[in-house]
Length: 124
Image: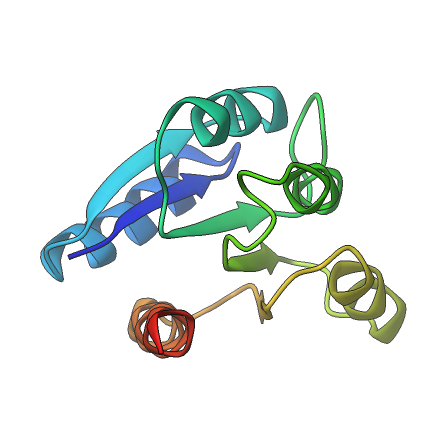
């Protein structure tokens, strides 16, 4: 299956998303802040990243922006996960290069479905 980075400073959210994706037989790599997410993305071959917008060190939006600037990770599919669903926040996420945006609270099933859909699109 796929190797997916899940970056969220909330351990409970990180564990829920990791469990859902792991139960779908994906390999999940976890990060608790933006700098750690970038380090993992630069050292491992990833198929997708799920990034929380509000993380210490670097926001998910900034991590996404930096991934897009790096030729090795520029095409990596990115889903932003956040409690902020204001229109301006969504626009900022997409402007940084995010492929999808999921607002908290979320259904783990929805996260799984969106991950599967984005993986399918990125492989075609």
